[in-house]
Image (tube, rainbow, N blue to C red):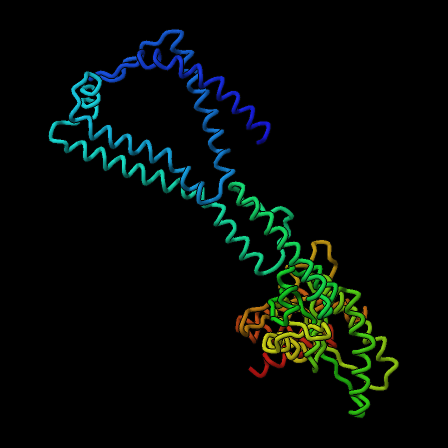
Length: 449
């Protein structure tokens, strides 16, 4: 028995014994008449009432502590026992009132409007029964609440380790033992996952920091999960003899471009063969890597005899992925089709690096970037697309930056169907910058209708 429980037990004894002794004076000071309760309190009665209330409070505290030491079946019985006794005594009293003729009984019958026909007695019995049922429902709700918490914890444990060290269930001694057992299961489960499953397939360190343990466990079991992030797709094309061209592209991709992605916390999709596809969890990392790709390809192309044409797109993605036995990230080709459509658009506009408004919206406010709006793509979803001007030499970048406002207005006119107006503006832009290939494409589209 806890020390606090012993203290409450002593206090209950010290207050209940005098309260029982003084109870006759308290009972005699309370009378029931047809007009209601008549109170005639003296100093002794006030003392008796105070002792009675204190004894009742200490008794309730001890009763709840007693319930916490019981198992669930005994708690259900003893928690409803007082209400059942009160309910039975009340029904018995109502049933006997009609046959009693004492002044107190007559006063109670007058207050409750109980007549000789007994109809009101039935109504009071029904009311007491309804109240008793409601009280039982409340008691059962609070007593069985830990069972509901256990159900939620077990469902959560079925999906993976719970981060909390202590699992709060509530309830009595039996539930505290169940809580302790669940904590042990949680810890043992974590050890099993850490020591066995995680050694079976090597997880990239980046995924271990970005994904939840539930998602990591699914990857370990070969299941697909949805990963939300930002993707960089790069299409490299060269000229020259085809066998050597293919070899140079493969060598550049394996030795330079894929290792470069790790510097920006990127994960390469291993199943994408025709383009380089890299997943990032930050938009600025994706855009930084895309610019680094352009610089690396420009430097390395000087050592290759074939000229490399590069088209890169950056967009947000919600991708279904899984890991192969070597821990490589495998994506869903169907979900990547839309991103590949952006590559085709960048080829059409002769834009080396394009990105969507999804990237722009997630960039930090202090991120420096020169870009321009190049159009809207509507296919499965609506995207505003932008071209990075950072990938061009300074002279071309300055020329494109100078004509940015006019170019964007002309693109908007083109999208609104005002092609004649847009054609004039693109023609003026080309007079100032003949190397603006996107303006040239739009100009031809306007002229050809």
